Length: 233
Image 1 (cartoon, rainbow, N blue to C red):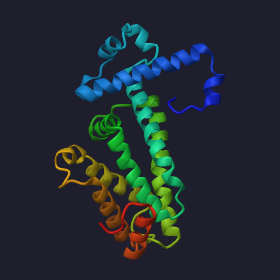
Image 2: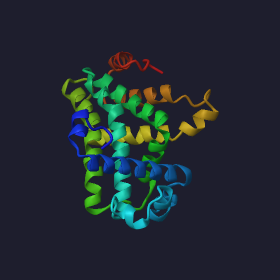
Image 3: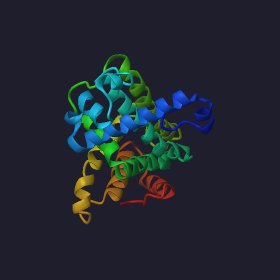
Image 4: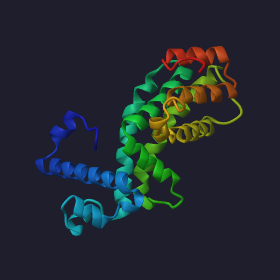
């Protein structure tokens, strides 16, 4: 919805375009509520008030809170895809891993509310979105994880890292969890920038994992340089 082509938009009826505009406005207001008060601040009643709708009118766009959360998550993942997709074009697979990791860091820095919402849903122990509402979110999540898994799989097939231990998916999840933890320091970096510089930390984390997976230090550092992320930090 956020990244439709000009031809797709032109082919839509005025009514469909108005509906898309209303959906965008609703999701933007929902994100503002979450940014201000966390997930607990988001309710259908508060959102209806924020966009000057009756609850009944809002339910025509999102029939449940699950559907609303799914819509927000899908929007955030679409935004993240924009940051990651260019990185996936890097030929050297190790350099691709570095660029993907730093693209996620840029997303966290440039879209702090979207990153905060994604982080909140990851940390929330409850299942926030279930049933059919979860399908679009799952599809987007898998597609994004596959960008990293493919890079790691290519690196293994080219003997740049070992085939074992761990499958590309297991390594992808390990890398994602590591980055997610580091990027939670983003708030602290605003106040202690001299102590918490996330750029070198992200590079160091990726470097450490790739070497731990059998990558040669010289090759990993060369890949980091190709990616423009510095070499050994």
